Length: 491
Image 1 (tube, helix red, strand yellow):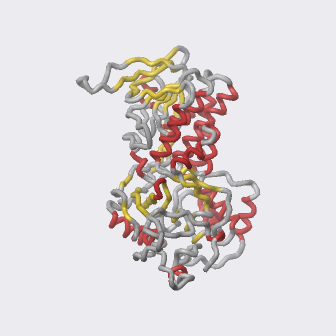
Image 2 (cartoon, rainbow, N blue to C red):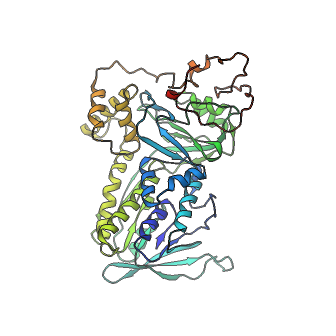
Image 3 (spheres, one colour):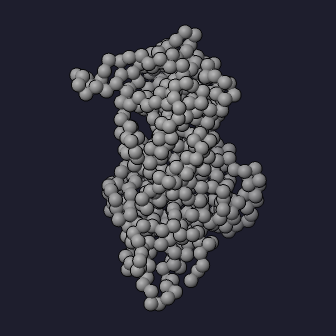
């Protein structure tokens, strides 16, 4: 039994399907037949992307899932070849770092993975059912769950609760998990919790690119810097649209409408995002999210624990939108690997809890490291080293690759660290007060605005530079995929 059909629940069910005759995913909401909105995933409105680790892990669980997602409309983006990326100290060069992402709306990602899981033998979905409690068994075990179904004819809207037996129960119900209460009702100690406020809020909306828009990049990422915690991302998603998310820091409220979003984009470290969306067409309202605290439940520290019960995903560790999907996939891979090694789901709960804690520790440490002068000598040295890497990344590909691996919470290749360290330790001039004004693009930035068409008689092609341009003959409202800057010939 898997509680919740989030990405953590879907991937955990896939891992269990190879070892159980029957896997039931119990879901409180009604599941859409396609990429529809689900009430239990309010964060689905915000920009999502499957980073390298998450994509590779999904391929292990669902072979060929990348092709399915691409056919459904997900956009493959090489990082940083297909992306303009403003790092903490300036624009990063565009080169082959061996990293990529699949960018799509969260509803589409869930729908494609859900369809693949439905096709797996022995997997069923029990929709519109809510889990109320765990059923304890002899010798510290869990033997099922107590649940109730939705009944609109009943006075309280629910059917009487009933017991659903299961040999193994996985809680993947997300941030709102009731596992601590369920365990307390069975006589177990609740886990210790670590909570840190991220101080970050998000605002997201969709745009149709300007008519005739041409660019030598697909995505844009403006990272935070030590003195400016604001970030922004523009990702291509299915249907030729842009998903734009802007995050604030220092507990600043996020933009509430398109006018505020445009002003906030213009106040970022570089105005390129504002230039891009100023001539774009909004496709819906601006959605805001302010619940981004980091929360971790330390189940691995409990001495007494029921066997045949596991907590995964955001129910175990919620690290905001940056790492959620990656951690969900990694939890499922840990479950799959230990089941394969042990051969049964009985007697491995202790090993699973410790393995999951070890898996999420690096992402938790990087996601909760506090900026500023506090934190002791080791923390100050770490920030100084990160600052040197960020500064070197503007000119050295090895330092840039290390910065990108750390941004994705990836362990960089062994050969990369010494090369990046040499680049960071090279003598350098004092960093400028502002980042370089010109991004590594031949279609955008100050130099691009002074360019002229190669053929004087041809109409100018519209570029999102803050003002509308005439539409080129035969141009389309679709945003064309254009080769990276290194593959284009300068006119």
